[in-house]
Amino acid sequence: MRNTTKSLTLSLFVAVVLSSALFGIVSAQSAPMTDEQIGRIRTSCVSAKNTLNQLHASDALLRVNRGQLYESMSTKLMARFNSRADSNHFDVKDLTTVTQSYGTALTTFREDYKSYEVQLAAALTIDCSKEPVSFYDAVAVTRLKRAQVHLDVVKLHQYIDDYKATFDAFAANLNKTDGATK
Image (cartoon, rainbow, N blue to C red):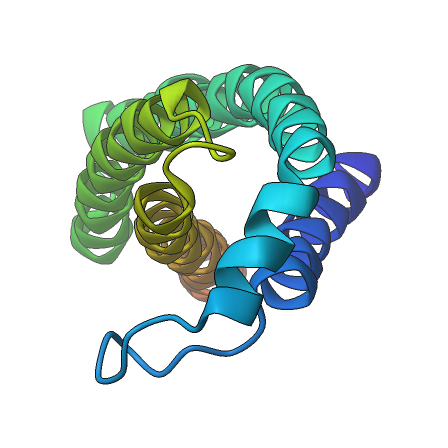
């Protein structure tokens, strides 16, 4: 999991540095791009495309691995434990609430990743030497969608932490109740 987190962080860093270094800072379409900026995009076109292709490939693998891990946590850990504890007549309301929120966040992650993937693929189809402004705009939108995926990952990790804390409270309460009945 640490290697996956490091890979995700490295990929995000590369995307941010790439987009900033190649295209400079253009304030959200308030001013048209200069000829110098357009020239930089054209001269860096092949390099930018190669980097984006590498990012596209590594993100796809990371998404599959990360998605399987998140799915397993939901179906094989959280849902199974909640179901088992509930069948033993324990109060799992708090655990179920966190699990449901996690499931919603997981669905959002999948949808946002798909949107990012589609946008990145669209950006890669643009010929940046002939349409540098369109390419820049497509990469800028892609970067925003990728940042949203990152926020989704952060939210999933927060729910995992919340589930652990809720589970710890459940276990402590169970131990306290079990100790009082002996």
